[in-house]
Amino acid sequence: MRPIATDEELFVRCKTCGFPVATGLRVAPGDLETIEIAPRAHRCPRCGSAHVYEKRDYFYRGPSDAGRRSAAPRDDAAPGARGG
Image (cartoon, rainbow, N blue to C red; front, side):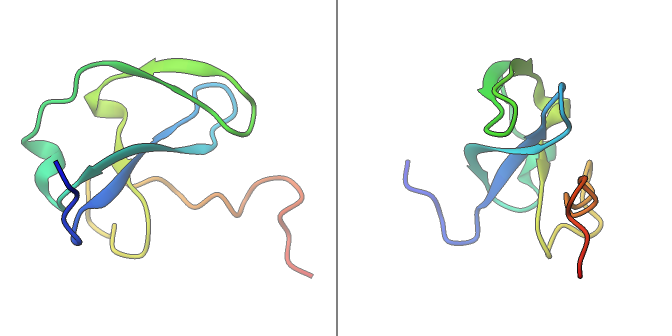
């Protein structure tokens, strides 16, 4: 199935380091509550850990995620990410 232009990528938060991991799954805004997502593994590009995630672990990320379930905080609070 070809992604629709309004679909947004889903993320999970690494269970080891907390980094938001892009999953490659794209879902129309608002459909996360109604679709089924089987448990699947994702590997964190930051620390290399792989974990299995369930539907409740997925969230949208970006400027349009206000008011959506499980919107993750931005990652700019990471150590060494201070502005000069």
